[in-house]
Every structure is written in C-alpha cells, then in structure tokens.
Length: 234
Image 1: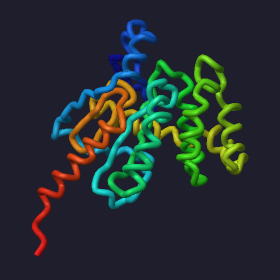
Image 2 (image 1 turned 120 degrees about the vertical axis):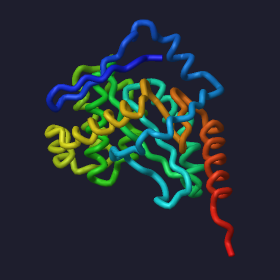
Image 3 (image 1 turned 60 degrees about the horizontal axis):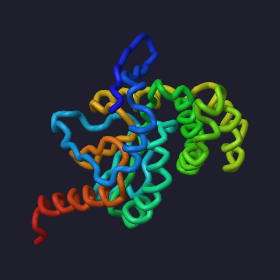
Image 4 (image 1 turned 45 degrees about the horizontal axis):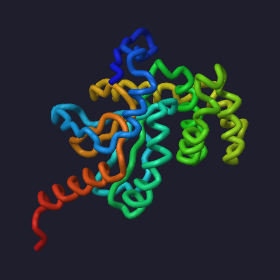
C-alpha cells in the first residue's frame, strides 16, 4: 500500500508518496486483479464528507457510493472500464444507490490535476460524466508517461464532446476549479485514506480496486439496515 503524507504551505496542498519504488507494476497488478475486496469499518467519529463531489443518480436514493480517485491512477482506470458501467446500470439507474466521485490527486501523478480541471470545466457545461469517462478511456494519451503537457489532448476531448472550446479553455487556463480539487484532497486525507481508488458505502470502506459484487453486497446490506431501522407503517 502506498502511504501519503500531507504538507500545507500557504495555499498549496500536496501529497508526498512514500515507498513508491516498492509498489511497482506487480503490486498494481495484484490490486487490479484481486477477486475479494478488503472491507474496513470506518471510525464512526469521522465527519461526513464536506467537500463537493460529482454525483450521478437520484438525490433521494437510499444509499450513496463514494469514490475517491485519481485520473492518472491505472487501477482507477480499470475500475472505470470494468466495474463502473455495471454500477451505473444496475445500481444507479434503478435508484438503489447514487454515486459520488471525489478528486484525490497524488503527487506520483503530475498530470492528474490537469485532468481534474478538464473534467471540472466540462461540468460547467453539463458534461462532467462524459469528460470523466473520456479522460479515463484516454489515460495513456495524456498521462505523465505520454506527455509533460496534457492540455492539448484534454482540449481535444472538450472539442470531441461538443463543448464551447473558448469557455472551456478559459476555465482550464485560469485553474478555476483548483480550490474544489484541493478541498476534495484534504477531505480524503481527513478521512485517513492513503491511496486510490477508495470506495465508501455507509460506514464501510474498500481501499483499492473492487468489483460490482462487492459494491452490490454493501449496498444491499445498507438498504437492509435502513429498512430494519425504519419505523413501522401504520
């Protein structure tokens, strides 16, 4: 597991990752391929998420699935490609759960903040999830291994999605939504998260990759607990 350390200076927030060399491709492969998730019960004294995420689904859904993720994280991209479509179709669309995504930028991924800004600026034009999906699909086109300047690739996605290019570019170049990204990063650290992706359902945390079955089991359990606690109808 990659550990993170927080440092604050002025208005700059950053995460220093310790032990990166020890992780390597083998550890990432293990996280991506494991079949059974490790579920951790969160400390009930932790505050509820205060940062502003991006939510998909009905506001009155009985359960919320929360993801803290980094666009440049390969395991996050694997979740987005393999598991997320099922979560949306089988949990979010039927109204069983809503899904909220929070940015958690890690310093090992220098281009991820640009991707987060790109998605946030697309959100201003009502196309956050379209940009979210396109960014993950094209991760190998804009990530740190591919380029030191991901703006051109990300701007291409904005054009591809039919956004107002001028408005998107002004938003991106002004780093308009950087405070929102920083707030989400700080929220992840306050919740003692130390890697991406991380999923929270109620008081349960799954650190690392997960499957649809893992998430559905937590959603079903949370719904059952709510139903059991509800007062009887007269």
